[in-house]
Image 1 (cartoon, rainbow, N blue to C red):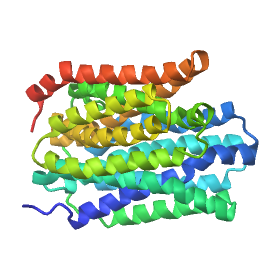
Image 2: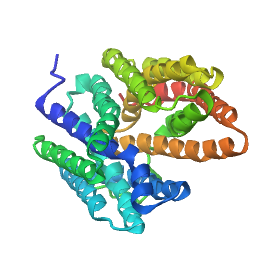
Image 3: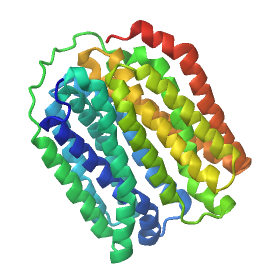
Length: 390
């Protein structure tokens, strides 16, 4: 059997960890920073931070096209450099407007770097273990996401300095760039695409059904993750449980990715996706229906287990829809649909919460998730079996 953890794959895995670690170490502290440093109110903070998400969303489809059209290693290093360099902007931004510009611009290289790095990871994996490797690759995201916020908060509590945290993020992102610079593989010959510009150059049209299901699941996650802390505090009286919730969620994600990687190796992406969705929809049901600590933390574990099976399986399915010269487009399509669902969930969840209440918002999240599951079983499974390329 071909070796999964080859040197190049380990480097790309570690570089991906650094992307998410440097990103997540600052993210939980930015609302506090904007409030204390610039006196921004909650509405202003929301507007400033939303620019990042919007820019990342806009950049992803073009990122996939660029990754597929130019040498991938070169694209990766350029994108990663700008991702690293813009952390320095946080240190020098002396006004709220300038900080908003830097934060918004940072979304583009973040979106592009994640697309490029995941595509390079697929390239350096042995073909016989590609599906399994995709599952393990996601562990780098989960591990970084679970520990970085805790480390960031610890550093701030000890130093009371936001600049030190920005410097740590800058250094970690530079280490990721340096690691990716050591990756050695032969770029595949880029065949110029002489066809007329069309949607399929930027979006994997064949995967639109799969993308709708992905957006539905992201919608639910956007609602829960955004309004989790305020719900726990105002309804359940849980004032410090947000970090624990995401820690439990991350444990579920990591456990299911390790378990699911073996079945992905056997070509069971469809089975993994189906099982993961059923687990996840039950987790959202538990969160919406049971208003106590058991429902709160129990849903975290179940949603984590479900998403940990579902995400790498969906990524494998997107890749299986695409020819080799459109792997970047396949990755960017999945991430674009996920970002779109997250954004819709945040906006719709906030509107429902403001005008109706928490119950309605969380039940809406479950209904959309359930609709996504139904759509997958009725429309996506048969289409994938018919049109997958490998």
